[in-house]
Length: 460
Image (cartoon, rainbow, N blue to C red; front, side, top):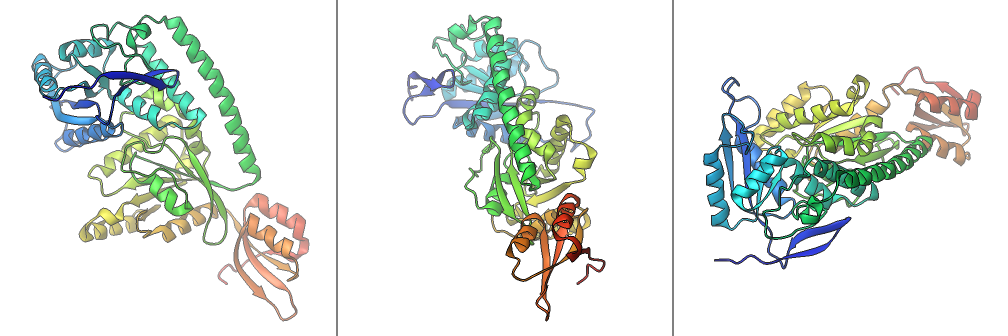
């Protein structure tokens, strides 16, 4: 029999987190609770096994050792334990057999349900919200991200100020969810937590103001913003790295990226854009997390073009896309912004040749989509051209005649527009065909005057 290593306390955020000494990971059982719906048409919605697989992925994202996993199918949800007594006893046996310290329940548990299940299993219980919060807590690296995670954690904890964990022998304190709140946390007054929430909200308000100033600063640059969104693990960060040459964490992990990252890149005709990578979305994302990360996700609402990155090799690609649309709706994205969405069908390299042909045909028949592989680079040229076309849809092409020695004028046009063509004449003049937005056209007219005119024939 393998003995469990003792717990130790270590600094983590504003408190302490439970850890296992040495390389041994926390042993966990993952349970997906599936409610049977006799009225649902066959094949509708997500499959229970796919949901269980996703829950296992979430557990692995925080380095849990999964000793067992199962689907608990129930006809009716129980107020006391969510699942029936038979399943409770079955899982209790798995906990004992696998010497599990933690049971991850892929569902939303009430404080009472969590307390009762911990008593029945003699193990820590983490529901879906708590698990996602734990991942976010480990992934956050910026001050804003850390504050947002702590705020969401405190709001989650505030609703659970019951003596749920007093039966446990180990006294685990902490900011981390695997550690639990500990005895002292259970005795904390709601007022103290609310005071901490209020302080964090004030700090976040200051951070949001700073972000708004940065956004206004970018507007003066100005480069359009292109934001990547998508289901977690769809390949956003890999695509971001491929396009920008950045070294953003890109692993086969759910929520590998939490804090937004931005880079300036150039499109085929020289136009510069700000490319923004954001946190991945997921089904049943807790409302508190959407609210907490609203400031971060405002980059999406402010974006000129949105790239919805989809993993088309995933069996539930369509369901994942629906989840992303649902979160965008909750963020308040309007129809104008929706018209600027490009669907990037990623992971072409993982499809069989037959499925590649099927997806290529579907993409060709679906406006606003492009089939790519962020790994191999296939389709990225088409994607960049689509971005350029979207950004330039309302722009106008002008002819600007310059003295060939006017380097500053040429640099000005390259920096603020898209130089589509250049031609030298026998008399020494230089003509640049430049695509300009309405505001830049006005600035160019003031600078170049009569040497600039709208190009009527844009074919050459």
